[in-house]
Image (tube, rainbow, N blue to C red; front, side, top):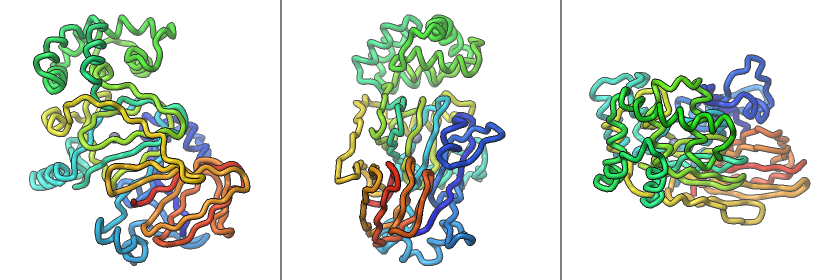
Length: 395
Ligand SMILES: [Zn+2]
């Protein structure tokens, strides 16, 4: 096993306090700390500490002896580490997004390469040829948008929102696809004409604290608060807040998002585990490029009944089952003095979100530590204080 140092991403929506606290760093320049990545993705260089002084890149370590570091099964099946582990601190909401299937990602990536779109172009849709299913486990109260509301609930939302009533016949005749296409193809002026009155109506209530987080109006108010309430240049993503499930998770609860499921994180901290990919198609709440025709190809236009996962208790671990072969995650919670032991035939990465631990009686790890575990390595962790650790592996 080796200690890892992941990569911090300073995206603007990140909080200023949580990740610096977790990683034991200062934040003198008050920068946003949005994500902490651990894996082999080219966008998140992760260092492996070979001893106290020498380090190498995680991809270099794996390439030096793939069979030793991945195990034969993972090497044969994936050729590389199939997952990417992250810690997120969502202060202001993220863009509405959807991730492609593996087949669609491969086609899209090849097509953009053939067309000569540079990898770092702002208009590039596909950063790699992989899918990006993801599971997230809440580290505290967490809020997100997750898939289209079931039909009756969506109709209720439209009926109780005067500015959106005109969408009812469109939804009734064209279904989810017709409804979504309608708002995504509106001109900027038309979006303003519909959304500005809505925003003007709900903002005073937001300021007065009248809306709860389970109501779309709260999140519309939040957007206005962050961008300053100017009531023009409104984001068409606001429609989606009314179309999607607003889901709240408690600490330790998880949710899985497969290809085609539109979603957006609204607020909170989480552990996120995904396939090793950065393929994101955006649908609003973002200043970034939106390719509407491409986005429409990847969304699954159907009702989503959110499945919140409480995890399966196995001793000190809560195990979250994901319906894909790329990854699985465990949350190990130990009281001071307790131990947890395991051995796994594939590679693993851990991240410790609270407490101090020792590994195999020799390596002491503080909160925020990340560890690489080799296939078949026997591990015993012992809690020096109450501790929580997440362990990502291949099922
Ligand atoms: Zn996502």
